[in-house]
Length: 408
Image: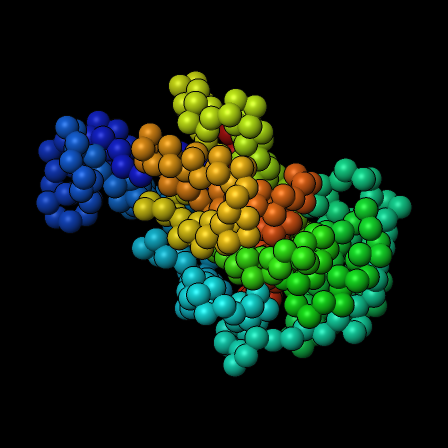
């Protein structure tokens, strides 16, 4: 997701945001409250994350209303969670770095079980596919339907065929979650090939199910898919996760909670970032030069999709492993080369760092997936985090019900 601000901002902008004079800004720097940019420039610039943190603290002192409003827009935390943590530019799942999970070549199932139970499995779990029905509502799916729409249709379809969907024991819900994720991974092959769905669902892991469903078993990309799924699995209280928690707080079943998440995810400002990057890639392919296209967008005052994240002032740590996975899959890809050139240009032309979305666009391009399947890795990976938050929210009393401030 693109950021509203670059990583570092100049003195006048910092003073404007904090509503202070330069002398006060310099005082904050001397007290270690604001970090200055280390590389030499004619004009001093300051770390945006520190500026915004001080702004939130100042607003918090002015009353509950302003701080509550700010909290709903990348502000102070509003919900306690043990599922994940983003702090000092690092992401952890139940206290464990997903980068380490990837480095140790663990599976997506390992990361999922960790998120759900808070315990690290001794070995990579094997999820059984024996009792999974080969649901095939293909007659309701147009040929060109985007993958999130496929999932949005499948969830109530499967829920209607689950007579025990209201059973809330952890054993029942985790079994349901495992089966759902396997089903949805296999459904990537819909609506083109129902037979491929049946073949895919029998594979031994979610990454291999996806590998088969995407028609890529000969390329052996399951390790790269595992990397993407693990790093997409969870990211604190984003819009889709918040939607899932709201549904869970009302007592809705797992299917309904996930359907709520899918609704929020489908918006262009959230789950469709990869599609926007691929659209930019199409423009680059037409012109043949990534830097020229990016320069034209910047000159028009337009943000480049796939760069900047408000929670990572020094860059999204998930980008590098996914980029490396893409390079391992298809290092000769022209599309991948264009995106690498775009990243290189942006590093020189702006303070925006590549986000996870750019890494996913690289991997999707390396695997030569169609646009309608481009969001499949992100969505399937994030199912694990949504399930974890739904189960956690159910343990809390009361409904998530913020107040609104009326204005004419």
